[in-house]
Length: 108
Image (cartoon, rainbow, N blue to C red; front, side, top):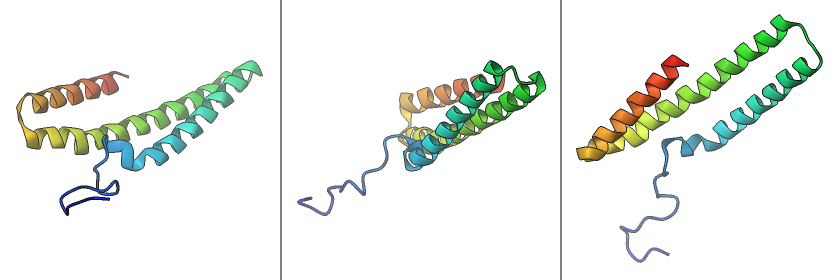
């Protein structure tokens, strides 16, 4: 039990990573994606029509991109913003880290 009004309770402790408030949503989405991957695996094993498989691969790609963009958005709004408010080398490092992540996403 907190001994003073300034001590944080677990409910008041900010999440460690920006996505933590949506962790369950991300995990549910990744489980669905995992199921889709198994479905594509089954389609290949069953020698389904190429275009049907490619359609599913395209859907998987879009689903993964949506997860990546959500994580990036959370990272910018939480980790990068906190570092920017604090300033200094950590802010520069977080901005470079985010820029590098964006470059990787754009190239994929």
